[in-house]
Amino acid sequence: MPHESVTLMNRRNHCHDPQLTHYAGDVNVSTALLTDHYELTMVDAALHAGTAHRQSVFELFARRLSGARRYGVVAGTGRLLEAIERFRFEDAELEFLRAGRVVTDTTLDWLANYRFSGNVWGYPEGEVFFPGSPLITVEASFAEGVLLETLALSILNADSAVATAASRMSHAANGKPLAEMGSRRTGEYSAVAAARAAYIAGFSATSNLEAGRSHGIPTMGTAAHSFTLLHDSEREAFEAQVAALGADTTLLVDTYDIEQGVRTAVEVAGTGLGAVRIDSGDLPIVVARVRALLDELGATQTRITVTNDLDEYTVAALAASPVDSFGVGTSVVVGSGTPTMGMVYKLVAHEDDSGNWVSVAKKSADKASVGGRKSVRRRYNARGVANAELIFLGDGPGGMAEGEETAGREVLVPLVIDGEVQSEHTGASGIAAARDRHQLRVKELPPVAMSLTRGDPAIPTEYR
Image (cartoon, rainbow, N blue to C red):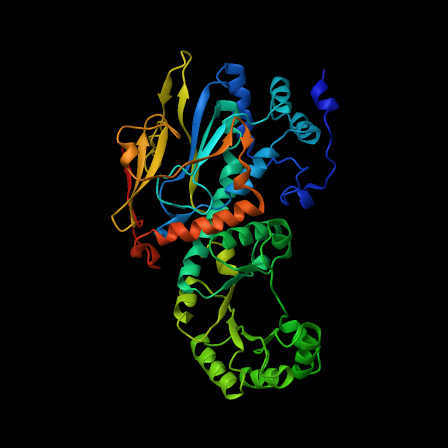
């Protein structure tokens, strides 16, 4: 007889179009199928083998820093916690699994009642990390914990890659504001997540309106070249924009001739023109000429913003020039050549049938992991500069290994306690806290961390 459990038949059915809502943060939409097929077949087999309910510890970490970066930035934690709250197998999800014969009827019944009830510890969002850092530690039964693998990796790998690139750009800008404007260079929902990650890592605004609505990030934008080309002349385009947005707007001056564009912009808006934007040319030379021309025309307070396929290297090259702000698109949303941080999610310990903890680890060449429950502290020198990431093997997060109490600052914090998400890590307040945290943690790193060259991590990871 086909499986039709009472639970399945009586649960609320979601009729949303998944193409429109599954990634958009809708609190009524399940995240349970944002996972890989084999996560469910492992649960299925473990339930039948009697091992599914063994208490286990999973860790999410990166074996190395992709792109030979000097440090990584944790981003996506708040999004992950919100996704865990929505990790529910509702009628639609269960029917899909049943129709595809993905798992057995017994497992479908177990999934119908799934609620994560364990603990999650981790590096708080905005924190910096290094090779081996246990960014997320999940304490739960094997079945509960293994189901979160793909969800956690897909969020943190992408968001942390964006945040790491954005952090490098923010430092390269030397205090000048950056705006994220890469929506058209990535997936429509990835763009929202990227804007959030970039904001946490130091960007000041985004062009993406959904990121503004969903996450409270300041939005910005005025006009593209098509607006100028629409009108019979550049002057008419500028007049229309100033009439609508005021003289403090930003006028795009490189559709035709940059020098003439600047002159026309000042003639139309007056010397109180807010800013001009440059999106082409040899930027260091062009920017210097535009600044001189603006000053000559009396527009001494008019700002210059540049775009044009910037990355951390071009931002650094322009930081000392008379540029006032930057707009970064493609490079930041794809992690500036490093679109993923190479994070993995591994079982590192579980209880045996007698209730004793057993450390487990992968031994494969170049993919070895360190088993055991862990806690983390960051050590500092007398000047308050970080000099080591210390990972203690022992009782795990919240425990205290020998020598740990005097070894610096504790890094791991509780994110989920007995299935309850800690709300200070989610929503707009969580983003604001992550942004502040990131600024503080980057300042604690040694100067070598800010190098844009490929190299070793800024501080070593030591196991104790």
